[in-house]
Image (cartoon, rainbow, N blue to C red; front, side):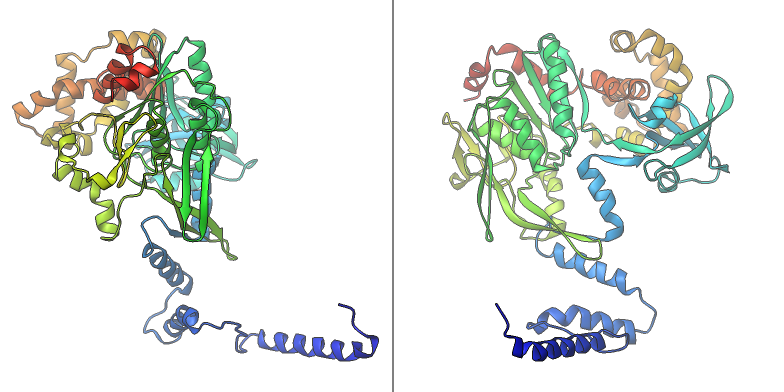
Length: 541
């Protein structure tokens, strides 16, 4: 709009007056200029101001507001959340798949920081820090024998990329202390726990989360297994809580032909948005079994639902968690953020993944215990779905909605945890300490022989097992003879796997543990006896 020159002095005066008024209103001690037509939205500020001014004791108004906002978001649904500014970085690191630090996994044993492993490619790995090393000094300060905690270790070892930290490390094999100057760097948080060949032609991938790095890791793992003549894949999503939507869309795309529905979202203020496979899947002909359980949520359920509804593979295990709400991050001016639920996820057949949460947060997160009590974890027959929750796959198979993904092949949960002695040994008996101590004393010998020899030849003898029982006794764990005998075989396999983890990390654990894991063995049996994906699906109809 063009302003006539005769009006310019009046406009200038008006703008000056408004500026003076706003400036005066924003001076310390002056009343706030509030442009808010809805008085309800001033209530929180008004109440907090009253508390700050008139409450009997001193209060931290910022902390009070944080708690208020947390409760506000939690009242909407189980997954909307408020993230204070001081916690936002940690949340983003988990989603993005990296953090900044020296790059070691550690445990605290006998009041000493012990390195479980140096993260591959990280600064500690490049300097030659090894499993079994003890960190005894950080920046000249003793950290052994001072009652150090996990949080204290993280506070000392994490830091900005490019910053340096001085460590002294005791190496038992040399019986001497070594000085290290480590330059902190960006450390990847790996999503693929392990990728290896279960059997000839059968690959196995265990994915623990969906981050910004997950798809690249997954694609690399697939490529490596393909070079090892993989024709069939067991894709393990058990216990995977989900994460970034884009990562799971890219993974599902690898297995599906072009233009197949993967998932769609819809909400009150969000139009239906469809996510389809964008190209010919690189592994479209791969026979596929996906493993899920009550800990598989969100992105894990999207992949399982897409594979199931498109009749692309079989789902094996137990009903998944049932998280099908879409959260959008919204960042606030003070550096905090909210993750607000704006839509729901639906599988290609139209199933809502989200289960009911009308009974409140406690009941929602306690629902897994109901599955235990009502027998669902041990028998698929205990689940009774009404006809309204029945849906059809592309080939006409019946699948179920109403919360979570129901597997095509049910595998009951392990009942060992109900054994009092087994439970006590895991929680108070120091199983991990026992495994670490054995691995620490025999690390060089074990590594010289190699993982293949360990998997095939190492046996938990009666003498070895009795040492484990004695270790439990030292920790105050006593069991009846029949209790011990009931889980002896299982615990022997698990202590072997725990030792392997200390020496060969995740690959060691899974290569041993999967030999007796019922869900993995069920998947292996299914995938070995079928020839081709069509036969795999037909036998499940």
